[in-house]
Image (cartoon, rainbow, N blue to C red; front, side, top):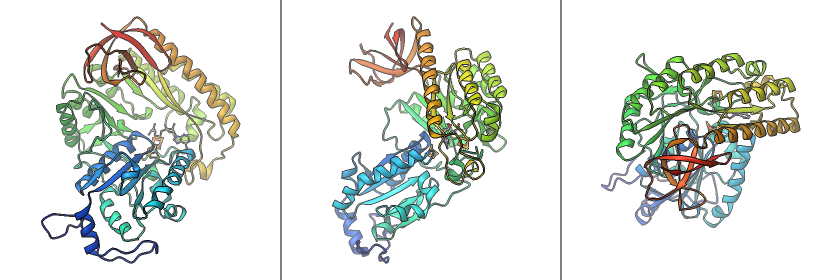
Length: 475
Ligand code: SAH
Ligand code: SF4
Ligand code: F3S
């Protein structure tokens, strides 16, 4: 970022850049200067996809604020609109294209409006995206957010700008995220970026680049600062957090222990962990610290070893079951959740039955279930046959959903009559008379407000439940 030489330290826009887009005139330095004097520039950020993307949007918000942009929560008030995008499945990209069509009206009304595509879709499609979506002014991949002010400068001058360079080292660890959509109680801390597991179906290694871990001191300092400002529930975030490594000094067990030691009142969670890297050491560390939450998200993807092999997941059905048995042995009250894909290349009815039986056996509290969506340029797209017909994929998906619903409900019913400690996060969705929070096992609990407030730990007796929620009263 360049700054002009006056004392106002205003972001400087390159004086005259040739305009590629003939509908937009080039601005002189004087024009730009006047614009910055006259208006406070504002940015609206809309996020799609996983928690990593939401966490990145908080970094983008911080970078934009450092460059004198204010954040607005309405697209129609913004000078700049960023869509932070996801490519994980075809329908994720379709949604974003649909949103772009909706924004067309705003752009028509205000041709100076800058629309930027950030994140995984920008990285996957690169300049093709600029060709396909004429209303997009700039694209920035997940490692290019520091260059956003420059890209905006170019776009302001009619150049359609792009930076999709991936980095082997960027972790944004010096940027203090702005938690603009927070309840002040729960926050995510990004501890690593990228993924190099190359599961054969997955775009993430291509959109987010090499795995790299963030300096532990900056993570612990961020957690401490969140605790000091009232946060009580922190999730350590990465595509595969349990392969976190910093020099010889830190692995994930050591890191999470340090964060848990900040204060017993701080709840610590993590997402996502890969079964092949879920070590006994980590399980023992969780068991040792009560404030490391009794909830592990352990994506299975398929219950069939043959399918797991084709997925390049690096574990078998038996290995996965052994990990769960070890968790159950040392942390008997631990809740489990998972991700599953139905209808991956070559999946037979027998493979599908194996997935169903493993779901039953594991007794997950929650599962995220998806039909396989072929992603261009992945190993599976190039080398395997997407041969399960769409109607079979969705029939199998419905069967997974049905079984999982029953298990979730069954697990919740087992909680009726028990007492659980809830960290209050806000009003319940249905009524302001009710508060809502989560317990250590990540179950949502709703109960009458009385005199309790957000941030309190409350002992709640569970009286009834739905598939997704426990309902109780404070004792
Ligand atoms: N890093 C995490 C997952 C990130 S993506 C992990 O390895 O567990 C979130 C989930 O999306 C994956 O767990 C998988 O279940 C699903 N997914 C990824 N690629 C997919 C594809 N091509 N089609 C359908 N689902 C997919
Ligand atoms: Fe994708 Fe596999 Fe990496 Fe998860 S571990 S992000 S599924 S490649
Ligand atoms: Fe989507 Fe990228 Fe996350 S593809 S799931 S936003 S890492």
